[in-house]
Length: 234
Image (tube, rainbow, N blue to C red; front, side, top):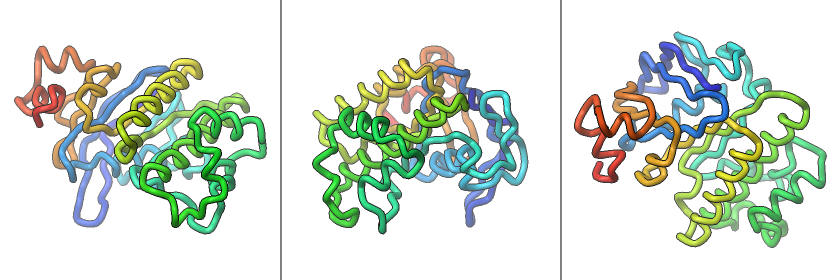
């Protein structure tokens, strides 16, 4: 479960305020909204990269608002990857575990074994996303293997992939979400992806406009732009 209750945080001149919603355990949630609405900042608050100044963050029944990132069991993928620039691709993927079988299986699943010898600086945008995704999935799986709860946070993780690789990678993430019984929250501008989610959250100017099952939001939108975003018109 991921639950934010009246969360607020300031990031420079930008403010998230009164953020309240719940992604039930095992659900696949999405966050939609215009550029600058606070989607990435909200993921950072959940991951502990930013500390909420008010409100509570709950992950799997634990109030983690003041916990450091390494204690939260979160796998986070930024849109631009945010890889460790002075580590190899292999070291980026395996930083959270020494299990060769785990990171090898993830590399094979995502088809990125050929990148092991590529310097981080030479990776394309799509390659960075795939390496970052592998790193996050290995982190989440290693937590689960230790009997610890874990969540997966994705910030437009497929945006730099070509269409064929995007579909394959999206399906892989969905399969792992289901097989591992993960709680996942993904930022997306893909309306079709948003409609497939269990729960959608629409942000605007640092506030939640509406959250809930996408079909219910389409049938009873709080504002016109809810339907626009979910129908791919916003």
